[in-house]
Image (cartoon, rainbow, N blue to C red; front, side, top):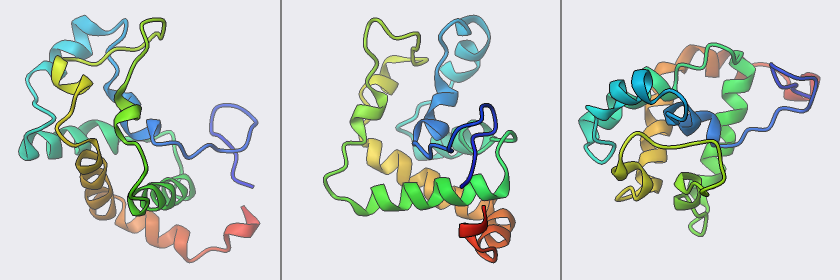
Length: 138
C-alpha cells in the first residue's frame, strides 16, 4: 500500500494535490502577488501555472505521481464528477484563491484536463517507471 509522504497513512490521491498549491491563504503578499498576474481561464497562463505550480510536487515519488494520474483520469472519465466543488472554499476554511477568477473558473474540468495533459509530458519518465512496477508491491 502506497503511503503518504508526510504521515504514516495510506496515500490519498485527491485532486487537491494539483490545485491546493494555488491557495494563497497566509501567503497573499508573496504567492498571492506572484499568482495575480495569471488568468487561470487563459490557456497560455494556465499552462504556465500548471507547469510551475501544480506539477511541482517534489515531495511525491514517481509512484505517487502515477497514482495521482490514475485518480485524475478516473474523474475525467466520470461525466458527473463535480470539478467545480474542488474550487469552492467555505468561509471557515483556512484557504483562499489569488483572484476572483479562481472561485468561478469558466471550466474547472478543462483546467484539470489541462493538468492531465501537461503531467503526461512533464512526468513522462516517472509515469513510465512506475507503470513498469507491480503496484501491489507498493
